[in-house]
Length: 234
Image (cartoon, rainbow, N blue to C red; front, side):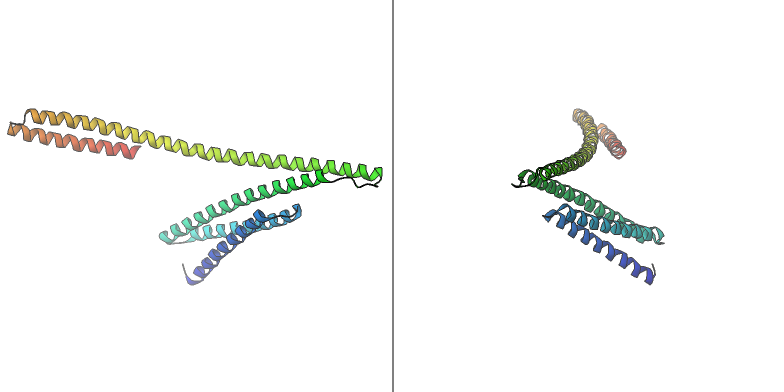
């Protein structure tokens, strides 16, 4: 990679770090937010914009990796792009969680505020009806939004359950492979024990000892090769 390309690569890397820090800072603001729905919407819009910019820089880093001539450098840039992509996914997940919690908090506050309001004495009947109708509309809107938020939480829980299921399946497969290897080693140990008994039985015969020792070593090496081969296969 020539000098100008190195400079451009450095700029791309700096932008990735910069936008990632911006996203994390805005997510922290959402977590600490004690304001209105409008404020939450404004911060959420900024986070989405920064995430889009971060994604563009990661795609640019991936493009530079594909255009790199040297295999070692290309592999290094590809791994760096993959790490950045994982970081982006983590940021996006953290944003969704923070946004959901803040939304639920605001909805709950709005509901409590509506329920705590009292009709001011002296207001006309028309004004009272208008306020009641307005309160019902706000409650219906908040209830609808709360239902959507609960559906989002359900989907997040389902995603986590699916990931946990995949992990359990992987552990089960690994356990089965270890069990098979253990059985093979037990079988090999039994055969070696039988060979030792034969050697003890004919221990006084020098020529027979040498022959049996040789055969035992050959069988032991063959058994080891079978175990190693099966281990790599599984």
